[in-house]
Image (tube, rainbow, N blue to C red):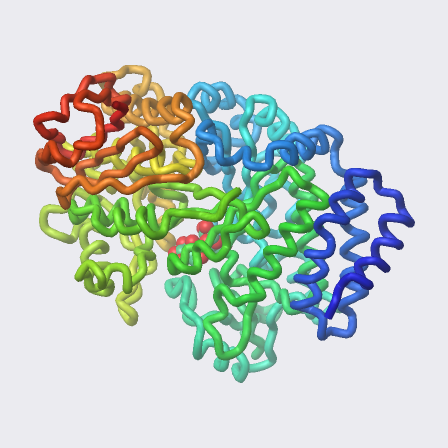
Length: 621
Ligand code: GLC
Ligand code: GLC
């Protein structure tokens, strides 16, 4: 089907009829055909698809008319420099507003600190209205437009975004678009059977369809409920016989994207969030938005089409906005989300997991393999590289990659879980299991960087390990992300009662005020971690070669040492607790004397090179 005649008709109505201005018209002409194509490929069979598409175009014109002038200026800037997020100056940070700074005003007061640290991108964890007490750390949203009252108001958020922008920091917020909270007005009306909301969720009258779907889907939060569906309850709290799709917790209900009206409703919410000054949208739980009987209901082709449609919507009505995909899935699928037309940025869960893997085994061979074959990305896109996030650490490497190196994926994951929960002999880690599933043997890991790398246990190499782990995230390219608190070596905090049923709270502790104070003293523990991480951030800012994503492999001929090049710079990292030697001929193509940029030390490689335990060198020759 050619979409051209349809696009023409809608254009006549929306563009010619409403005169939304030259910028909108130009962007409409450039991107609406692509939007129409994706939209109609997914929804074309439905009788209302053209009306929905027309209504969507109208929504775009309305949202553009309401978009604040300051953001329209940013739109033009970003259009003139579309690859701004590839710059070596990009260094990210993430935090829970309440835990790290109290409220939005508290974050505003920290802008100076963030600037000094060298941060240019700030991901604030979900801060919109949620049900209490359970809301999955904000990922169960009851309104996409109202800020959680204890954090501030929507005006506070808009003001904060403007101040951050002024300070050269791009605000990133989540678009939690796979599900809403069960108390969102849409959900409340859906359970009461009120049109059109009765078509917004996956509600079934009995177990027939739930059983059929569950035959092929994964359990995501088995501690909370088995399978993908939960029973609906009547006013007295008794199950009423109906079942609703809830991939995550029982109070997070999956939206029914099969219905184009749901897509359109979420597009409006997305543009409303964009209008608050958000520059990066973290596309939460992307893989799950499309369901199809007989499939795993993850990463189906329609997911990509709808993401490209959302992307085209931003190009037309909020072009400063870019997407970051949160797909913690098989590495082949992770990259399938990253392209200029889909998500320009994507988390790099493989590099994250393999950094931990290399530290546990002392052999970064899987990481080297990943850098060699899974690091490249399409032009105009970038990784977001992290050591840890607010979520658990899962072992998402490909079994087939591991098999090539003689590693059995299943056994290896069991080893890694034992190592990081401290159950393995010799382990320096103090992690906590997350969603341990005795039936499948699956388990993931909770813990802060410092606790997982030996600082809590008082291991002599903890500091060097933290420096190395952050070094990998900072030096391989992408946008590196600091979990705020990690830069001062914050430890696990199991004291919060919320931890009891969701161990991820162990590594989402409150602001460690004492450690931030201590960080001012360079010889203190916090001060040493702070020095290590800030010197890496400073290096990123000083060297343009560290931006973008291009990376060369470098074989150090030592299984414990990871080597890679960024332009003329050579990074060497020793993953073992013993000194390692690199033979001189490995350096034959490089200068005999090089400078380690992290310490300023001159290094002679003519006689080969000894690396201290967990040493990290950035050589420039
Ligand atoms: C994402 C979030 C995670 C949350 C889930 C459900 O994976 O990172 O914290 O539990 O989505 O929204
Ligand atoms: C959240 C969970 C993670 C799960 C993922 C799926 O990030 O924490 O374990 O695999 O969602 O997207």
